[in-house]
Length: 480
Image (cartoon, rainbow, N blue to C red; front, side):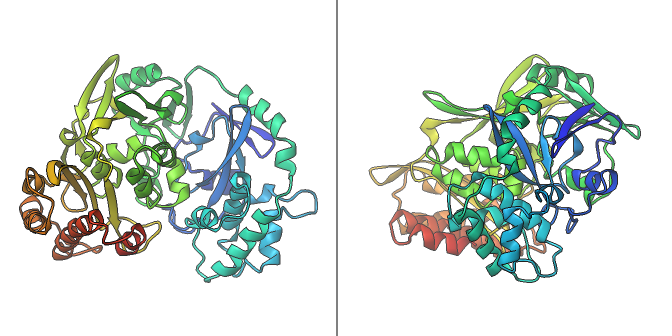
């Protein structure tokens, strides 16, 4: 059974198909049609809802894509939809701002925009255009109504008000905290089951007993099998409740990133520690996806175009894996064995990712080339981590995504750098060596020749940036 608050109403569910998305739950079980389905893939934001959770005695609100969120993720949270915002006969300020600024055109995407504005208001301390653009980047308006929508965001954030959610926050925190339980929960319906462990030990035991189960954390990739391919997964193990998997820590000689930490959490943790990773993650899909998707999930799905893996390969990261009570460490560059294949054993899961500080160059960068700046999949992803001593490259770790069946280091390219001065001649030789490392495929995102040329251009771009010949802004324009 799972329990959560639907606005202020306590809901207990013990007979739901765990493959049911929050979107379909709202529309078919709760008769709340305000939340719309636009793409069923987390791209358009029409299905955006807000999840509230109690953190340190206060309420924290996040916008998520309900089309990708399975009902098990609601345990212990407050689910807020566009129907909940009106207070009496008065519209919520997020709704009123859209009315005042003429932000709604056809209206199909409007509920999603309103919920993103609502969550923005709860986290913003005033008007910040960049923050607003980040919050709304995952919401697409097909009527090209962005100017009035941004005007609505400015009105909302420039005139902060106390709403009914603020007034009832203390009571909501108490109610959510009362729903917390240390025992593992189970949700089942229509012949399918989902376990909700609370500790790594519970997770290890249940996964060892049911190695055929699929692990689901944020669900931003696995849920596509349900929403796009119309599959049904008979047995799931949801990781959302395992708080220990979300911890990110700094030690004297390394960083340890919990596999269950969201990509947004990792970005914030590394912002002052490894800025290149944090900057890269800001182009990882939309805020809704970054708030749900996890670092371990992006590695574990072994996608050749997963943005986190090449960056971590260049940083010489290693994985802490657990199976039952046994744990082992495995270098990330030994983890991938083929297209969406890894060295994970049955019943084994990624517990954490380790990055040794000594391997991190202060000049580390990771760049993404895609057809649009926001919310898009990489055609080519490159990460450069070169250690330079007195003008000579002492070590080089260079990795790419989108260039092979797996995220992969460019070892011939690396060797062309090591022991050589970092100059135009060395860079030219290293660029030529990329043809020995990769024979990219052609698909609808890019041709093989294009990918190889882009990879070489990114290498040259790194060289020009190292020389101070281009600015970070120019780099961002180049890779968009």
